[in-house]
Amino acid sequence: MAGRVEGKVAFITGAARGQGRAHALRLAEEGADIIAIDIEEQVEEVPYPTAKAEDLQETVRQVEALDRRIVAETADVRDLGTLKSVLEKGVAELGRLDIVAANAGVDIVGPWHSMTPEIVRTTIDINLIGVWNTVMASLPHILDGGRGGSIILTSSANGLKAGPFNMAYNMSKYGVTGMAKSFAMELAKDNIRVNSVHPGGVDTPMVEGIMGVPDSGFAKGSEENPNLTGMFTQWIPGMMPPREISNAILFLASDESTWITGHALAVDGGLSQY
Ligand SMILES: NC(=O)c1ccc[n+]([C@@H]2O[C@H](COP(=O)([O-])OP(=O)(O)OC[C@H]3O[C@@H](n4cnc5c(N)ncnc54)[C@H](O)[C@@H]3O)[C@@H](O)[C@H]2O)c1
Image (cartoon, rainbow, N blue to C red; front, top):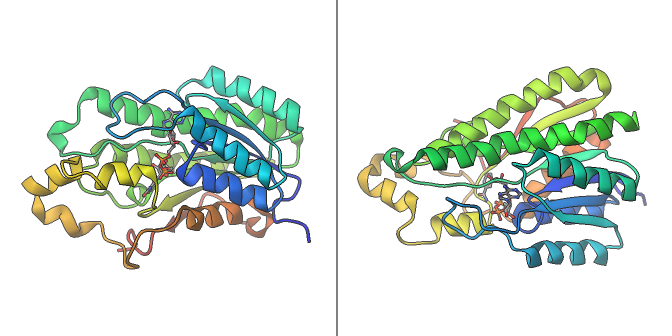
């Protein structure tokens, strides 16, 4: 039986680990080839480790084990020129581009007075302008194909309902929600759909780095402002495996969602729905 995205090519940012790797594997399982990027240097300002070169290599190994092709390169989503070169190479090798999962992101948590200009700038540069760079570098290739395509921007539950002690992240993720709708409107005539996905708490190194440490920015915020601590709670208890988000990405990437565009799809156990 043909896979749900058989013969298509997907570009995924932040693909070395966490949700990005899960997206690469889920789409590869359903027949897509992958162009993957991640950063290999620690992102300044981020208090938890960002991905390493060996993490991206592990994604390559796992995609190839599914018998799919993958072009994986180191790139920073803040660098539009490098994204363009990676896509030139990837499309030359794999033949086309149909799907984009703009997933790379960082989260630097803490009370409002801990947010330095550098933290705000880094967060906006990666989470918002980095997503815009990803789409801008991808669009010429999707348009060249003349077959349309599907672009999925990873926002967050924080892009629908602001979470406490997360000022810069909330700003960036609300921006992504608006960006998806803007691209969706203008690209509908070219049969390119653009949607945003809004995860709740997903079990990845990001959350481990934010919540799993005793003196986290979240703990500091809660200490001085305990009223806000419980406001960002999922109705479904527990932490989601990354594959739950990948299933939403797969649906939006596939021809099962042909008439869905400009939509903000929450996959967050109810968190943002009140
Ligand atoms: N984990 C959650 O609970 C959660 C919830 C809502 C939204 N999100 C969003 O989901 C996306 C994926 O996060 P995750 O949970 O897999 O965390 P993660 O930290 O495991 O993965 C993020 C990936 O992005 C990469 N990255 C960071 N900055 C980059 C840059 N400048 N250029 C290229 N790559 C870069 C990191 O190296 C990492 O591999 C992010 O956009 C995040 O904001 C996560």
